[in-house]
Amino acid sequence: MNAPAVRHDWTTEEVLALFQLPFLALLDRARDTHRAFQDPTKVQLATLANIKPGGCTEDCAYCPQAARYSTGVKPGKLMQVEEVVRAAKAAKEAGASRFCMGAAWREVREGAAFDRVVDMVREVNALGVEVCVTLGMLDGPQIQRLKEAGLSAYNHNLDTSREFYDDIISTRTYDDRLKTLAHVREAGVSVCCGGIVGMGETLRDRAGLIATLGNLNPHPESVPINKLVQAKGTPLEGQPELDSVEYVRTVAVARIVMPRSMVRLAAGRLSLSREARILAFQAGANSIFYGETLLTTANPAVDEDLALLKELGLTPMEARCAISVPVVHEHDHDAHA
Image (cartoon, one colour):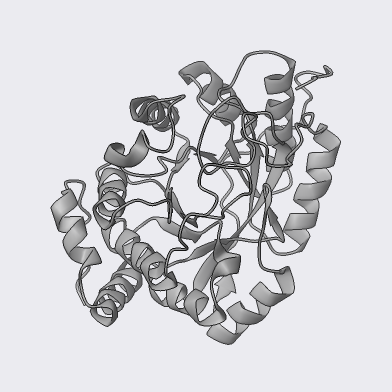
């Protein structure tokens, strides 16, 4: 089949129409799109490490790391570089080609803590795996420093539609998020940006999120699709569980709208049945978070994932690292972060 055109002018109405297709017709279209643009037998394995847990000043209604909620997550110090390198080596040995590091910060601040993260990026990049970080908001010079250390990608999710956003977060605006994404793109670093479904949003909100992502030019190289994991003590505790078919629909629509992107099965995968996970791959997912913990939430066991991928005839992708950077410690400060 001829590959459809890659578009950056999606309307919410057009994306909503995709969501409303009969489920099997939607899967067929997503699968055809996947085959037209990518190798459907390859899947990217990405491991996510929580390098600075808890204590975040934001009020994201879904997040157990927000300091204002009583969730049982204790604030922790920023990990040492050596600890992170050991974790990255273990992830690589387990088959991961991308190592992601998340710090529960509202924004990047200059100082010893950020200096240490730059060193982490440099040393993990030297292992031959792709390096991604998510550190909150940042500016142009900060993303440039990370890029020069060997950063492959920066994650900064939009979470939901512009219209529903204020129901979930009040401590930073939608435009703040878009501004951070612009800094990342201007620096020539890959963008990792997706959202969360199952937070009480409407189908139109899901369509609005995908339309916004689909109108970024170029599209995000990685698009994580998270299914809400309800955390005790957060405002979204007790939210009705999203039907798995609706999650798979979101994956399929993301694949159609952003055909060259890596569409990643992210948080909430443990709540999907084995059959729903298979459908998500059929819908065009070609990346997963791999490893038994995602920041503060559980994830399928490594052996379980490997067995399923083998059964489906999917093979892990190799790393596509950013640049070769000599490993030289830029800073050696103690950060109490």
